[in-house]
Length: 123
View 1 (cartoon, helix red, strand yellow):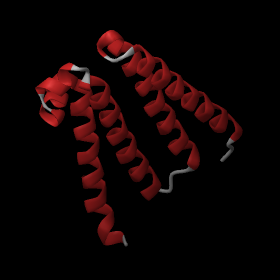
View 2 (cartoon, rainbow, N blue to C red; view 1 turned 90 degrees about the horizontal axis):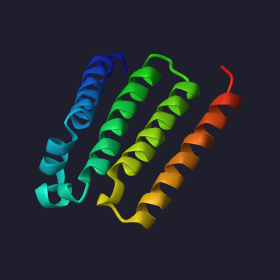
View 3 (cartoon, rainbow, N blue to C red; view 1 turned 180 degrees about the horizontal axis):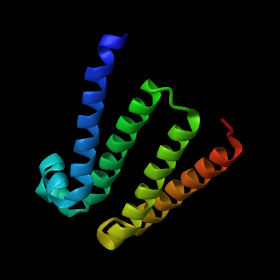
């Protein structure tokens, strides 16, 4: 198992780097990922969601390999949900109002649920 630890950390660091790249240059990342036409319909929401999830998954995996706990995973989940909500609201009218309202509400509810679970969880 120890032989896999270093390559796995390197893989997860790569995952984090990809996520950061998607977050840092959302427009270019979404155009390359889903095509320019689809990106124009606000693929930025998807790129931000993808980016933050790759950062969170990489960080959670590294944390777990080093003896991390449930609180770390919950905090990273909250981060993902907050970014989902913010990216959806920031898209404005580039996505349909009903989809925007429902998606933002679900993401906000998930973030609040995560906060409640985090508050109730002790090490």
